[in-house]
Image (cartoon, rainbow, N blue to C red; front, side, top):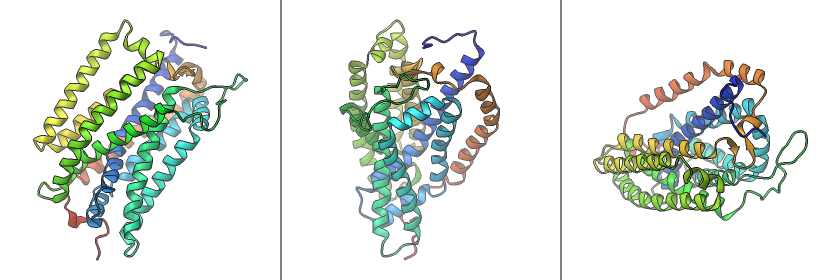
Length: 350
């Protein structure tokens, strides 16, 4: 097994770039769709159907594009790290199945709410429950991923455990943490999308205050648990480059303080930007911590990579596609930037 990168090997550099790009695609999805999911979770705790409709209206022009990044992750993983694609999707089949069901339920609820009358309350609940399912089981999948999994010893190694291998106290806790973090992102998003004189805007402030403190406790607990349970994390965080992780943590704390300050000053877009920076840095720290493993203590990124000719062809095919995706997301956010009120409900046709 190749556990060390050869800096003179061009194929290793291509592999490293694609590993980093897949991480960037994942974190873009988390930042964009995490806010939508959190807004859906928020809606579960409010009974006003018009308010729920307004929340749906706030994301009506962007939610499907946000989820496209998840498709990009799957395609890039299949094209560059097929061994990981096959084994990880086998290992995480059950939680990812619930993630898919949640995405489908959200999408159906968003559309059916627009056209329904007598059944609208069911689609209100479907929107919230689907959002909760995606956030929780995505978090479970991340926790299970960090645990690693057994691989077979054959010519083509693949997942060699049971279907419930992913279940553990740690993976369930990361599911809870992801749900709380998404709920915080949803509150910040709602405050950026609704008029400042609306009831929804003011209720979202109380929600954001609560979720901020819950997220601090949940994330700090997860970091401590990771340090205690996983030797690969402890060896990095307490190793010779400990100062880098301490410095990164200080930057995260500063960004957290800045997000909180911006939210209280009603600089809502700035609060969203600071939250995105927090998510990006935390995810980058995680990837740096597990390097050179793709899946911790299971398979390295260099052992999992596709042959260089296949990776090269895939790289050329994606050079134009990625800038188009980024431009499309930016354009959508700009077009649908106006703030909303409750009367702008999605399908408000009574």
